[in-house]
Amino acid sequence: MRSFEPKIDDQFLSRREMLKRCGIGFGTLGLASLLEDAGAQTPSLTDGSNPLAIKKPHFKPRIKRVIHIFANGGPSQVDTFDPKPMLTKYHGKTVPELAFPGRTVGAAYKSPFTFKKYGKSGIEVSEIFPKLAQHVDDLCIIRSMHADTPVHEFSLMLLNCGDNTRERPSMGSWVLYGLGTENQNLPGFVVMCPGGLPVKESSNWRSAFLPGVYQGTYVDTANTRIEKLIENIRNSRLSTESQRQQLDLVQEMNRHHLAEREKDAQLDARIGSMELAFRMQMEASDAFDVSKESAKTLEMYGPGTQARQIMIGRRLLERGVRYVQVWHGAGQPWDSHQNIAGAHRQLGLESDQALAALLVDLKQRGMWDDTLVVWGGEFGRTPAVETNGKADGRDHNNQGYSMWLAGGAVKAGYIHGATDDFGFKSVTDVVNVHDLQATILHLLGLNHEKLTYRVAGRDYRLTDLDGTVVHKLFA
Image (cartoon, rainbow, N blue to C red):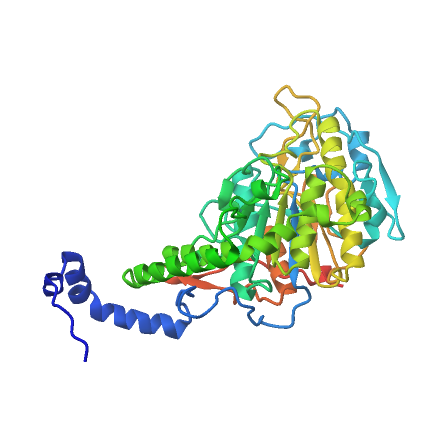
């Protein structure tokens, strides 16, 4: 039998330790039992389980992965995918039907862009998307979206996290929590935004009360060199074997540190992040290096940051990443309060070729049937002109706007819903944001009402107490 020298510290309890043992010890035993019964124990990265392991969906899924190209700022529906001849007829005239309650609205403002019918479906698309329009028969266009408020911060949080104001887990985090990820050497949820953070910053992809392992991994795709895209991705001084030995030692100390703190969730997630960072060194370098693409593929996607990050998005999906979000620049690039003719044209051309290429690429690589492409912003824009002296732009509009989906699981060459004659309010087959979220989760094999997490005494979900799956969108 081994013997140990007694330590004086063992003879005393700290005030905190005494209160913990005596005051709440029995209560925590009961609470732990209740939590275990409810299946609400926080998954651990250090107890041998893997919270990112592939999990069984609620029912057979139609898709495996999602890429959301986020046109943040609010693209104008009447200048992209919802043409309105009535705006030309009433251009420059005051139209009472365009007024928000308690808000001054300018005169009707016709689109500065022409629309043409494309494909067998004959769907009309704006001239700012000439290449994407060639693939309109692949698009499932929702013309009847509706959000709660015309404020960027609130609508961003609603679309990404299911709540206008409170910090909630993002959709990508919920998807990871529900399904895990297919590639353990890459983050399961990647967010790309060039030039910095968007409005509401990392709140758009946070895991909130879900374990930190489900949070989105942010990458500034304004950088082109791998070492800048992902800092410290390579170690020029140590071999991979030496790094592994060093990390094993550090992680062993971290686990002892964690055990003394009753498996603190944030510390647990940090330990897991260090392990993932090590595994990412080789695979992430490959995934983000578009120079490995063929000259034909590079030409197909075209030049520019938006094209490059959409191409990276496809490379990540191809390697098993579950949820990818591609932001069209930091701030609100689509927020055209003025010069909408020039601004929207430029934004369309920055993404048009790459969007068309993505659809072709997914088909060529056999990924079309089990991938969902989502395009759209947090709301749309008014059919009326901006009223604060800017006579060539549009204000925010949450009451009716467009988004589109693509992939083998949704109807192709299909228009769902409609706005009124001026493109102001959704009037037919209205789809609110929670409906869209419920629909995307359904395609992934998840019941949005059962994908819950218990915190603060109640079960929470992405769609809160709302949301209806829109089956009409399914192929």
